Image: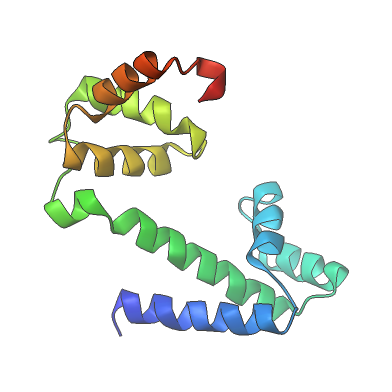
Length: 141
């Protein structure tokens, strides 16, 4: 079974769990932010404390992990075969900094930046120019 079919199956499982009002993505994300590398026993203890089924909690974690893997793998840059080696270094550095507004994770910021640069290699120079012209201040970004 290919990764898109697996991701689709996992999304169906997640929707079923949410429909049962048992556990949500937000429940799992809050847990994972506080426990970035949890042991099975930590997941089990947390799930029981929160009134969730431990297997459902782990299933939801796999769903989120799969979504993240698909996100990191797919996108405009990957469609075009555009990689970090293709990107102008100054634009990529600028992009990684700008995309902090979306995530503190450098892999996610780099992924978003590469997608934009695959569309136009002066994306972040153009974005900075547009923001200056519009009077966007740093605290507004």
